[in-house]
Length: 270
View 1 (cartoon, rainbow, N blue to C red):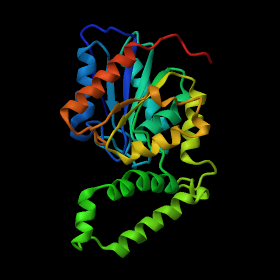
View 2 (view 1 turned 180 degrees about the horizontal axis):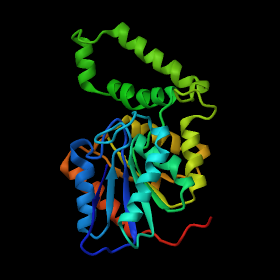
View 3 (view 1 turned 180 degrees about the vertical axis):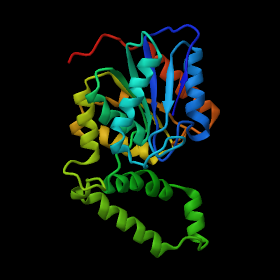
View 4 (view 1 turned 30 degrees about the vertical axis):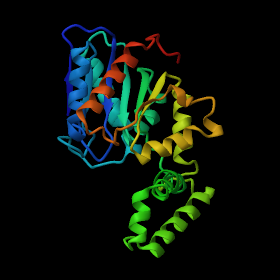
């Protein structure tokens, strides 16, 4: 099942295809994907959102983000068949939808760009580092934490055990593999997908989200130095992972529109 939002008059030959993060369907949290599609269409950009097999109104077995390539291809096919004159698509994805879009992009020359929101690059060690830096350290610097501690409201032994466990995970570089046990860790495969796709891409990060913090850690590493300059990343500091406020959703839509309209639509080389 796919839903098209079409402009009265298109201002670009590109379309935006929303690649859903899971497990979720084409409406999105807080109806974000519906509102995004309508906002883009109102501004002259066609947009399509769809259900993977096994989700929403689509039949079949449910699958994870690494197994939706054929679903994305079917959606791109349907988008082009339904919108005459479409020259290509920008894949727009949130969380593991962003990662799924990146994995798919190298296989389809019709993909002209990637807009990645809080991309999913989780590893056990990477998650632990993000929590140590952005949760435990922030708690130690919080007045309310020390007040609670002095009043006996903190289970000190348990808290210290949690910190020690996170520190051990963070130091264990051999654990930088995803849960599927693949040879390459998820961050390395995301980077490889971006390199092989060879299309313009941008990242939008929430300020209050550990998934975004983990991506920042990855993108600031030496391996990403020439690929992901973080000064080119759009940030929404107060936003949570799913952009639950209308103000944040509007900012996402505005950033999406500006970036898509600024793309060079020259055909990709085979």
